[in-house]
Structures are given as structure tokens and as C-alpha cells.
Length: 338
Image 1 (cartoon, rainbow, N blue to C red):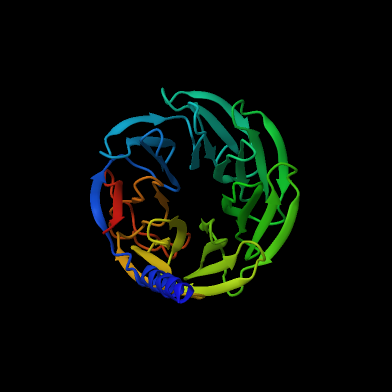
Image 2: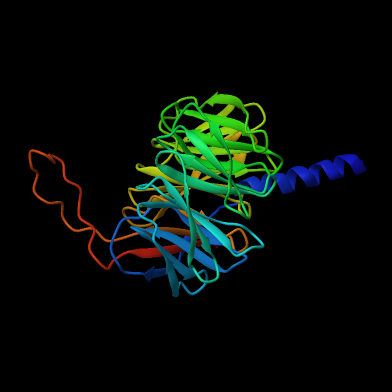
């Protein structure tokens, strides 16, 4: 009887966990201003800062107030930012000159410029290997740095165009290959590629999130989030998302994988019952808010975008011109679950 009672309680708790609603909502909107495009942003919980790529510089904000603390320059064509925990060292990826900038996270001053492969894009710090991995989208490779010195420790030949990556914190790194519709898996120390896993119906994967305790990868592809077993590479689900999908994060407080969609939405995906993944909420953001980061302490989610004006008249050279970003409207939007 005791065993049956324990089992019933477990099933009840598990059922209530799966049934929980995410219910994300806007908690703060801040206009930063300035001009230029944007790509990745990164929440540094330990330092209390939000690093935002913005044209040829990185805007550094207070994580709670959004007050602008400074800028990191020069970072022409900046894409990604990483900060090494427990140090005052950070890095950016600069797509135009094919370099990374090592910077002081206290003074925001550049320390040195490091050559990378072609079009460095995503970047991540891996605590297991104590290395920084720079993913060269057009170089089909990853440039590997010693995190404290910035010295190049090696190169990973990935066999495809890498985008976002995650670590299991035990020596294995997973990275989307945008042109191959795959996830590549490699060893963080030996730099040996172990697997190339197909993403089912997923095409052009960009964002990648990870539920480490449950061994699940969430890869954001064209209008779909692919859920994959990180131990076997088996595709577990393919969940529709908004259009213009780019970034992805996992919120452990709600058990939700979240995609940021350029159409102006967040798609919230949960395992609603064992083995079944559904989109449980669509959150309205603003057009262009396609990249995302999460503060692992507060579990707040941040996206960046700007206001758009009308598109210019078509020309022979540009038959389908894009809408123009309004100067001075660059902003941060912060979301939280109730």
C-alpha cells in the first residue's frame, strides 16, 4: 500500500508539473538608441550585465535597470559575446575582419584582436575545458581559445556552417550546422568530431537550447523547433514556431524551450506529457526581435529590436528592399513567467 501511495503521489506531482502554464509577459522595455544592426546578446548573471551586439560596438547594460554602462569597441560587424566566469575577461566575434576581440569586462577596453576563421559568428565559453569556442559560419570550423590568455588552442573542422552551440559540461559540445540541417557533436578537449545528427524535417538550424538533466536539445529551424535526444541523436518532436525563427533558450524554472522569431513573437514549447512536446504559448514581442538570451538566475528573457519605417522604392539592383530601421529606436525587451 505504501508503494502504491508513493507511486500515486509521484504521478500526481509529475502530472501537475507537465500541466503547468508558462505564461510569459513583458516586464520592461528600454530604448537604448544609436544606429546599426544587431545580432546576439548575452546575460551575465555574475557580473550583473547585459551585453548587446549593436553595429560596430557592444552596448553594455545593467542587467536589472537596463542603464547603459559603456560600450566595447572596436568590434566591426560584431555577432556574439562571451564572458569567462570568475575573471574580468570577455570576447566578441567580429564578422567583417574575421577576428575576435578580447576585452576587459570591468573597463570595457579591448585587450587584443585574435584572428579566426571566416565569418566568426556564435561564441561560447565551456567550463569543462576552460576554453572559448568561436564558430566560423563561412569557415565551416570552430576556432578554439584558451579562455584566460586568448591564445589559439586549436581548430575544429566541422564539415558545415556552424551557428549556435551548447555544452553538456562534461566534455561534449553540440553545434547546429546551418547548411547541412544537422547537429555536429565534438569533444571539447580532443576537438574530435564524434557525430553528425540529422534534424529530421528541420531546415537551416540557428538557435540551440539544452535541457541538460533530461538530455534534450532544442534546435530552432525554419518555422519549427526540433527536439532531439542528446545521447542518441534521435529526433523526438518537431514543433511549429513563428516565422523568422533564430534564437533559442531553455528556462529550467518552467521547463520551457523558447524560440525568438523575427516576425515579433516568442514560441514557448513544453513537454505537456511524457514524450509529447507542444507550443503552449505565443508571446507578442516586436518585429525584428529574433535573437534571445536568458538570465539563469532570475530566469528573465531578453530580446533586442528596433522600430521600422517603410521600405524604400524597389530598384533594379534591389527589387525587394527591406524596411528601414528608424534611427534612435534600438531597444531591449525583458520578459518573465508569472
